[in-house]
Image 1 (cartoon, rainbow, N blue to C red):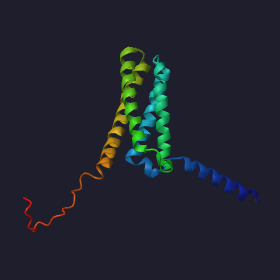
Image 2 (cartoon, helix red, strand yellow; image 1 turned 45 degrees about the vertical axis):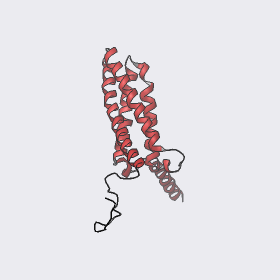
Image 3 (cartoon, rainbow, N blue to C red; image 1 turned 60 degrees about the horizontal axis):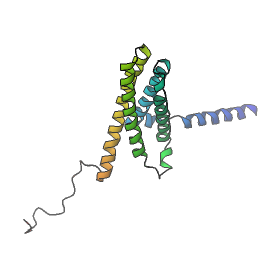
Length: 170
């Protein structure tokens, strides 16, 4: 009897663990890859800033790392679909715009003002992180623009008039 209970307990732990991991479909999507890249690059920037003399800038990568982790979790577990009151793409767009601006500014400052290697590395990784956030807000902006236009802009509106109709509206 103890073996059966142990197997069920192990299965429930594995189920809980797998429910916390992002789904493979989401991680392989463009949004999933961008969020995963943002998480990884924010973490690398955080570690570099923490090890450098430019440690005053360590909070920006940490906050962006936590925000990207939250959105990675929210999008992969469909947590965002439970809260319809928030406009998730707009919140994600504002997060990406602010993150790319902040990372760009602190990267310029850390590369130009500080002379140690860790600050230079933090600046370089900050520029790479800026590219990830900028790509993300570019794609989100295109999706929001198409949504506000009322759908896909590549579709032609249906023609309501016949070509053979005798209309005197010319």
